[in-house]
Image 1 (tube, rainbow, N blue to C red):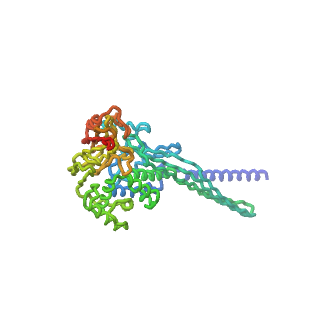
Image 2 (image 1 turned 180 degrees about the vertical axis):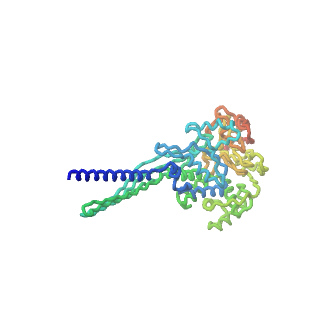
Image 3 (image 1 turned 90 degrees about the horizontal axis):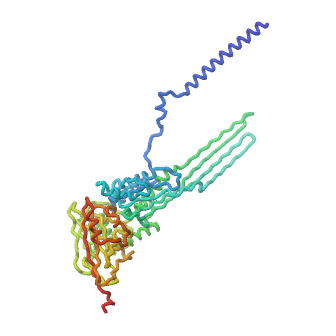
Length: 531
């Protein structure tokens, strides 16, 4: 009995030991099957989702802006930026590259903007000046874009809701929550030559980022065994994609304002929106009468209503073309240029049908002392200037009267004008804070000061004196290349400078063609003083 018992236990032990070994071997085989081999590592690392092109809500709007710039004849505007830093310290994204991409997409066809890739520190914009003159092919930008991610408010709105039901053998619960955060981007445009931020050329936009989640859980009792499960689904909108969207929107807005093009058309905003109708009204009121006529003539020429030049003169042929355009566009056919006509032309930008007839512009002459005419410059010739006033090229004003300067380049160029008063003080009068762009198209007449409601006056105050206007023109931007002592605020005296010094400073710049013209202004005694 004892022997059999011992023998039985020994056999059972052997059987149990053999089963354990088999189970251990099987476990090792299963574990080995779950381990990835080295040869498969290169396959595992490959992403399964194919790459896609980055598309935002404003990708189509950027293409629309490119077409809009082409239709309005905007091109070769040189800009730069130090980037769009994160003032909140919580968004680390490539904002400058986002800005460059937006500008590039707005210029694919029109070549409206040229981005100068220069990356100094935020406090070192002056480093641009060291590049000018040192690098022969370096083109200084006229404007710069500055801005920041100015706001990031987390959990501005937090909402949650839940519900449940419980029975003796079954229970069920559901829940949902939503959290909203707000991010803001501010952009501004500045003039590089003066480092002045241009009033009105700004954009401030905000976007709400939503994070939401849904959940469900259930439990049941089957016999004496409990069973439970839960499901959670969370979704969060991308923070950096929101930043890209805001930068693209703000870029469309500030560059549209700078070029005075109806950018709201590309944002799907109705032309009659009060905010943008007011913006168009400000543009119209800020244009000199000759600029309004020239703009209308260009649109009429492109639309086939007019076959003359954009001379800025409202002649009979222009009036007839305006009347026909008004009649075809449900406007009262008066032949006059008013805001309704301007707004309609903005709403229906003309296509570019090629160059019009050779331009020939007359300068308006209220004093009747000769009529200067600007003949078209030969192809490739450097620009020259026709300099006059609202009383002709040899003006005479009485003390207390205001002068209006009229300057017209014969070819596309950058124009700078200075005024020397009877005391010898010299100040830059163009470009100025009200007319910040020094680039003037061929044969386009510019009035200084601009508009019907003059933002400033050049008033004669010393009888018997002779005051002088001097203007220079060049095919290149020279405002950033002139000596630093002459880079003063507009409409303010330049300390210790004479008109000859300033004109000579432009003429001494190497590698460009500079033409200058001067106009003497004679000041007569006031009428009351003669009696």
